[in-house]
Length: 503
Image 1: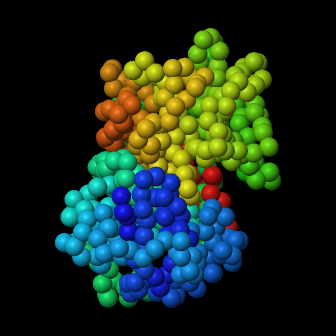
Image 2 (image 1 turned 90 degrees about the horizontal axis):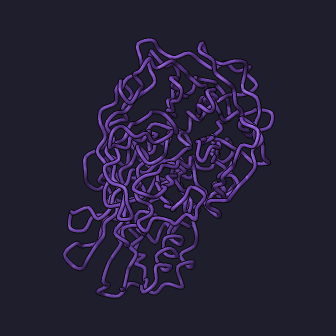
Image 3 (image 1 turned 135 degrees about the horizontal axis):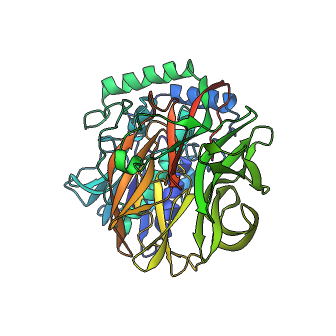
């Protein structure tokens, strides 16, 4: 197949080279480029914004460490790719100016408008861009793009360029065809509405320039301080209520030198124990700690049970074969590892590496249909940590794990990333998910899995819960239950000059 990539020759970025390399890796394709100047790119003031963010946030000068996809490269970098022939089999149009009647065209849009200016406009407006690949007005693939670096335009821009590449490559294999509809949030806090479809016109371009100037003057923001909430369910949990309980939540106290997040309880041999991510500020990373619970709440404070040279979080614990196992998040090590408790709640020893060479977030296991399934969002080729859901299957939780042939099975910043254990209610699997449209871990969704096998995974998000009067702070992030207790986490406002992203 002859594929032509239509891009603006006046603004060639590392993103274009990465996309071409990923398309070439598909095999059985001949690539060419159309580099005519397109016009209507992002305003020059964006370069000043990116430079200021680089200085304030301590970013590498060629962009963020994760790939620097926004970095400008010379036109000569495209020399290995010949000029587009008159009639390629397929044109991937990043500019929105290819005549649709002339050949087969895949047009890439963000919230209905083409070009990187449209993407940056959505970012600065605080929207969650809906990226679509269309052929003759029909969607071939779609995904809600995301980032964990809300408030940093350069980082967000690069994350979403990376995921655009993932979406285009996924479309070639028939994956990522759609994103699920979302219900209205249970409380206020919906993202701003999307703009009307069409190319980014003169008025929209001027509005983008104004937003850039405003952004330059508003680079200070608050960083979250995470906290864990708990309550006794009394027989009705959030999967039943689909709203915060009228009683509200009690908080697991911390001493200010650390915070707790990612609560995972387990009832083992009659004792309820809560495992948490224990982030210690002076260390700049987290360990896994645990605290026993009695009928009235925590019995003491969380004590360390697992510490490694790298950051740990999301302590997914479960019982099997009479023993307790844990799969903590260790994406900083590029692995997903399985641990076994030899002296519960401590004495953890590594039993196996389930996955390696992968930046996987919040690995969540469930047994279904005679197999084990592992859900995690993956940062493949750059991009966000939270918007590309990958699956693996195995005959046993120890492995071996096989990647799903349609990975990523979902690209959606509103419902891809796991947010706790998958629970079974009757014949249904209910999956807590993170809604990161406003920011990382901003809201909690409950999704019903309607299909899960080697053909694919489909889910319907039925409920979205936001922070509010009954759970103070700006975020709501994890949901788990055991032994008649239910746990969530979120954050309060903590002013800080430099924001830390928990991944």
